[in-house]
Length: 393
Image 1 (tube, rainbow, N blue to C red):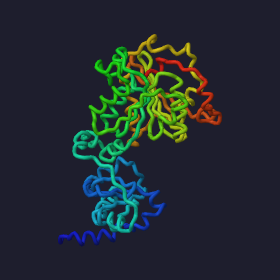
Image 2: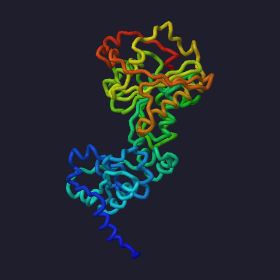
Image 3: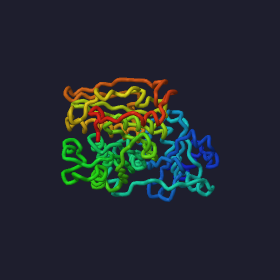
Image 4: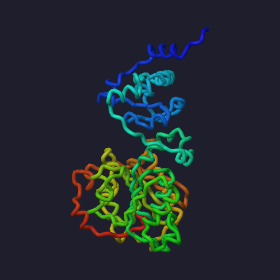
């Protein structure tokens, strides 16, 4: 059998692989239905990429494609610089069983020359690649997943028991923008469970103490410290501009105010609470037709049934366990992997070392996301009460 030259191979693949013209791919129909993979090296892609492109180097595309969980008939478009290497990659995906794979004719060069939009990609430098190497090795994360973490914007309400492990691990994971909201200062009694703070930061605003520690841990992220008390009047503004809100607050007014704000802002809420040796966690997304916090708790707990943290107590390690569950749910949401706790409550019993999973549905008559939604004035008129069952600050 004679050796096939590269030119002969390309000519053969041009007959076998469907090719898409840049003008056709630029149409709204194709931009909406197709998944685009840019297989150029990161250095080559630094000057620009087609908007929405997933950067996957050619030598790894067969390994990386599985984590995107694409259907066999999903339209896939492969882009390289000049339209040759993309033919090889398209052949590989076809051999894996994908039935609707296209090579972008002329590649990125033809797209750019035609005057179609180009954006600067978010990339990882050498130091970031070394830092996040254990993430990059995971098929569910990889480079594209780490870039999603870098581009993510998350708000954490409360820099206390729950907020401490959340902030530390999201900072370590490389979440690019983290906003901390807490009005309080660090006290000695906090240090038993609020591990982001230290004896040296007693007396400092919690958000500033936490910010210092987070940037010491990871200087590649941005931490926005807001030493403010969140309430129903300012919640929507304080939480604006982020994708995910994590609630680690310690009073019911804040809980309902956060819930109302994420409905207004169309955001996802990761909520949890702890009490003595147990805790629970849920994820709410009413804009995705999932339940909100008030679907689960339409009526506020009376004050007499909500003991304060100082009275009821809480084991310090519990804040770490439940807070890390919140961090894990947040990372899953950013990476778009796994099954978020939508419409579910995970209950953790620290004394027995057990977990339970309960399900609940969206309430059409919910006072916050349903037809009978409460007004800001109604929410504002209700009194505030700190509750250990909602411990965080």
